Figure 1 (cartoon, rainbow, N blue to C red):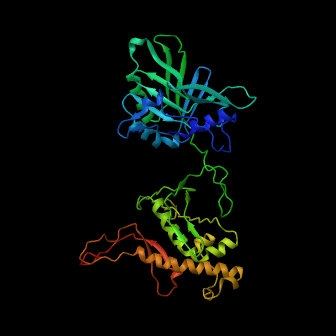
Figure 2: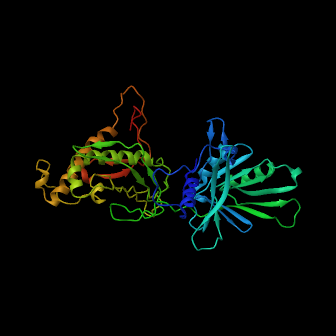
Length: 418
């Protein structure tokens, strides 16, 4: 249900913290059928399974009589999603391994002929005292009765934390999560001067511990903390003996549209179109690229924001051309003769770059036709609008020198067309 439990259990089994790096073949199973476990509280009767929503970057720290549940601010959407999918009385989240903790709770399952039971142990860094202990999940139960005489109750269950609070406290907690506010739960007897234990639910700095040590194949730029989208259903573009596939998109920086004229950029659609055109153009060069050791390729595309706040009112745009995928900017060299008819084995290094550029141009031109939709005159289509970006055609200049502009005024004719 959540991999962290198994990883830490393997660490306890083979005495490695947090877990061994090498798997052991034909090892005995460490977990069996679900027995009398706290996970039964998380039963999802709609899907006939157990669900435990995870929040990326969430960590739980236990130290002395204080428990800190830390939600990253940039994971607010995941927190709210888990909140909406929970029932009225139970709220649960799976946490992540904490690199700042020096120990972690581990769930041990013992299986006998009579029953299966769970025990709690702790695994820690060798020769280091335990000061901060991590937990794998937190379950907050809002069904505590006032007749028990407790304001709240906190206990370690398996490799996580169970907190029982009253229904009105649960409503206040959910409201605090929706408003991204910190919340504190004091556990112990009602009316006590000091609580026996305190559970602090905090909103902390953004989670940036992902894509660590990943480098861009373009210039070696570190991708630490840069969000990415894994492409699990990428298309294989097959050549004679090899194929190329789009696997991941890194979103280095996202600009907000200041003018409100354009719709927000659809990263998935845009990157998919760029990947499709790039892969189709490189299919014929796969053997050559593999021979040169270029088996991991990167394409970096820069989309300039709408700079409407410029003091001079100038908008800086650049027409996206195939040369952007090769050198990141327009090709400024004088056009040369085509080299596509020459055997690739006879090409010099510069001619090889030229052939790649030509192939990209051909694929790019074919791709542009798909963007121009031809509609019947009998169908009503949206007309040009103020603020739209257009390409100004000039018969006195080559197409690479045509300028980009924005529509400021529209003067429709008698037929209502501009």
